[in-house]
Length: 538
Image (tube, rainbow, N blue to C red):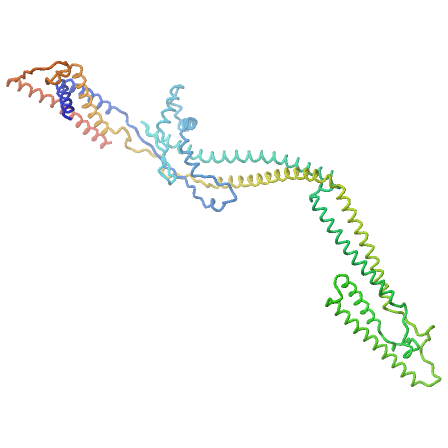
């Protein structure tokens, strides 16, 4: 630390020896710098504020129906890329600055200056943007800012329209391409179906599904046929147990009465026949102990007992009437050959039911034969099934893929149309918060600060000049430094004692030096006062 202080003090003493050179350099730099600051042209700043409102009520209402891009991100990217060479060229034409640039070199310089001078900054997260520009002419600065605001708004709207048009054009091209693919796939599928219409596996159903369906239909038809056959056989057996005609009881009735007094058992006979048919049908599915069968048989027995009672009652009444008539009276009845005979209604009912059962058996037999033929055909063509099903699956898969993509593209096209309508209604609105205006006071240069910088620079440059000259013409101020540089021991040193006249001379020189330094500071203060006065008057 002592060595550093000693070395530093040595540098100061060496520079102090050439302080007049430093003072001269400081005055030259100060006067020139202050003059330059005074003659610098004034720069007037024009600015405008734009607010981009992206919080529209349409955005949540149209969620899911329209494509909603990230407007905040788009506006942010637009603000960063707006100051580009093509946009600046448009700005030059809009602000009539191309009238001042006569040559290509001047035009290129003007473009470069505008790129460096025009500022578009964001104030934060509120989508508030500030456009600013400085120029020597206030009117030109305002025109440039106005053109920049117009360019910013038009670029925001134009970029959205351009993106929407490009997206819509691309979707339309893809729809046409997929429409052609879909038509081709439909034609291939139609030709395949027409070609293999009679073959198993050539339709919509697979082979095993068709085979199972036909097998199930055959089984059901065979079951129905068995039921009809059993019913027919039961009717045949019942028919064998009945007589075409019935005779009245010989002890109770000799003639078959033809009047209204005869027994009316036809309805009971029909009911008994129907119940017997029901019993036969139930016996095909259940045993004799089934409750329904037992109940029907009990009802049949009751009806037969009722029928028997009606016949006995009628026979008794007929015998009583015969006893009360005179001996020569003739009965009002026709004798029937071979005894009293009458058609058996049960027999007639069974004949009708048997004919219906025969027709049903014939119909079901034809159905069983048809299903059996179909089943045999399916089994015989089983070798073609894997190939046909694989080809059909491939064609159907291609068709489904094309149809799905086509429907999705049509849906996206509608979403794009809705999005365009939303953009037309102003989902993102550009609001000019502050129109372009020019501050009446110059924004630059700040002469007060520049004068201070010039004074500090003059003092620093003067001190640097003194130090540089001292290094070019070094002087040793103590024996230790001389010994270090010369590399030989210094045995002693002789001090110089100044006379009074010399001391007064040195004091006068110091006063003059500090007076010169003070004069530089005074010139700086005078310049500050002058600049402040001019600024107040403006």
